[in-house]
Image 1 (cartoon, rainbow, N blue to C red):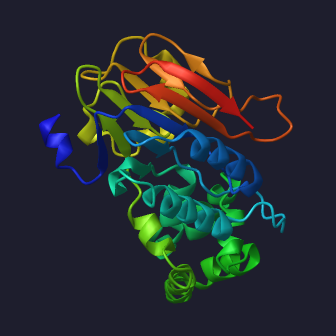
Image 2 (image 1 turned 90 degrees about the vertical axis):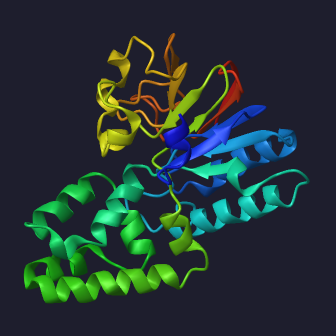
Length: 278
């Protein structure tokens, strides 16, 4: 645990009083506002907040209710609100990198892909369209520059980076995303986006946090040294699940009409105290 405390990829939550968790958001500002209201009413010094990632993403439907840019503005605004409370510190609020944020980083490096067109179509299948369009790109433009080659792609990715920087705090937000978070003490907890490879130590997980989600339900023994591994995004949408060594705090189900946001409240020792899904 000592070496993890010095690894900037992971957030050390130390020994919190309670932990508020927020599942995948997908740019749904109205539901996020309801979650933030619940946290604001009940947050106390000593608590932590862990956002599990997938802040943006989805189909580019032009809806003002689903906005990548405004969702991140909302997250940054709520962070300022919490930090204004007595006793709250910067490290008490943690943002994990989700699949959508990983796709965004790969999109900004698209000129280095062997098959840019194929990679971009794969990204579209995984929900990058909304984020792309909200930051000033378009699907057809991206397809065109993929066909034109590395020079056009480099100019295009530089344009996206400039558009990101035009929104105060957004570049810093993306750069500060953590791969996982953990608590210390007698009952340490591990928080991840979607999954882990239980056969590898935390420092060697690489992209397992995003792409090992389907195997998460097969973990039946504790991932040493942690009491629980807790995630906030289930790619199979099976709803909230708790067993002896893992928790899935994502209320999305395959038969749901829309994607809910789930707020879980845990004690510092890993007891699930409450779950709110909106």
